[in-house]
Image (cartoon, rainbow, N blue to C red; front, side):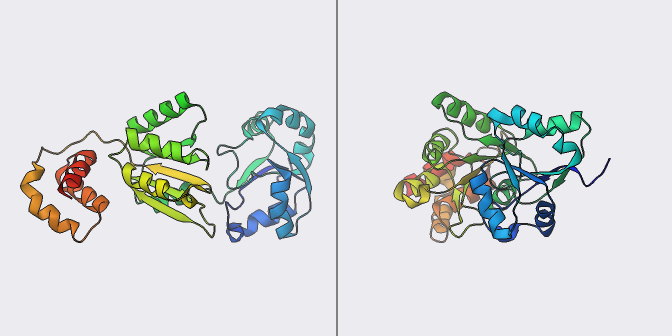
Amino acid sequence: MNKDLGLYIVATPIGNLEDISERAVNTMMDADIIICENPKHSLKLLNKLGIKKKLISLHDYNEKMVINKLAKDLIDKKCILISDAGSPLVSDPGFKLIQYCIKNNINLTSIPGPSAIIPALQLSGIPINNFSFMGFFPKSKKSMVEFIDKIKNNKATSVFFVSSHKVVKCIDLLDSKINTRLITVSKELTKINEKIYRGLGPDIKKLFTESKANKKGEFVIVVEANSDSEKPIIELKNYKSEINKLLTKFSLTDVTQIVHKLTGIGKNKVYKWILSLK
């Protein structure tokens, strides 16, 4: 078997074109065929890199047809699989194609690179030694609720994608169901308008309610894990003076986090009690 032939899974930038690796560029330059989601979208990157290749569109609905069409090419040509942005197969089509290559002993390798998941986790300020990727926030109301309930019970940090037209609904549900845990919303990662929003549910909801601009873009949300461990109960009223002093130096969210960490009292309870002080 010629190791230069077969299928190469190549990661492409999620925004900033400078994030593409030299190996990824060289691999695409040497390719015979590039399999992509949307040829018009991929052409923007390829034209920028000066790469002209045969493009074949791959989606969930036509994947079997594409596999049949490329059955011979996968053996005797160098084929590349890319997505619209980031690392292929992460909530993108291509799984059946990979299964076919494995089953038929076709040379298969990966050219790793950008993914929105890792930078969103890194920038969250939430523990990421144990995390679950949950995919895309769903479309139907019932599925949305079930999705948030899974995150509510998840013992690991949760990370998932949300489109711009569903981000407000997602944040509303997080606020109503998981408003005691830290949430991070990463917007337009690696792009000029990159922004990171951090806080509890009410804080995040306020940010997205007061500004229409915040609702535009591509989003990755990270939610702190569910922790059932609680320290012995401490009466917050006994520390009214100390908490007031903290409020003169730190934000409400920061004070809530500090008191929660020191006392083990649930963030929602701490948050509401501090609000009553203010």
